[in-house]
Length: 214
Image (cartoon, rainbow, N blue to C red; front, side):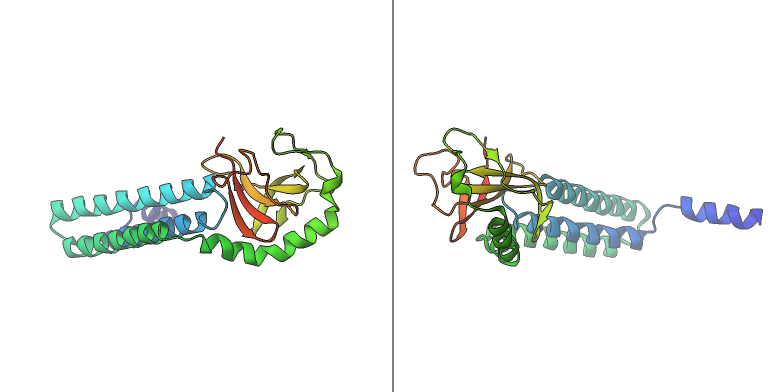
């Protein structure tokens, strides 16, 4: 029994084999690209998604470099290392190209799947125009109902009444600052940093994607 346990411990303590390391490197590169593209489907770029992408990319690069060094020292597995390096490079390049060519369609797709839930939420909350609040004054009035933790595909951390509408802050936060979805049935404020084109992107009708660069 002791011999079996010793063998099991020995197996667990062994380093990853070269094929496994390279496979993990490719998988990590794919995860990094997936995190990048997922982040583009939210207002702003969620912090947790950015951390996911960075950690996955670093893991992939470290494993590829480590495999390349081992292959050079031992003379074995060099072809595998070269092939995986090419695959990882292609994955990263594809991710960068997809990110640069993004036209907001990923955000619009996520919003399209979530809009019915948001529409239902504002109907439940009631008429926000009756509550005194203003983007210009920076005053966020309390929400008229119970703020849900999730609406559609968006995780929500806070809900506020603002400028005759509602602001739904997403839980993930953004690299720039706070971000979320804004409902403004009367339209955006004509003169306001909060309502500028740099921080708000139209999603159709009274709905906007909002990110605070403050």
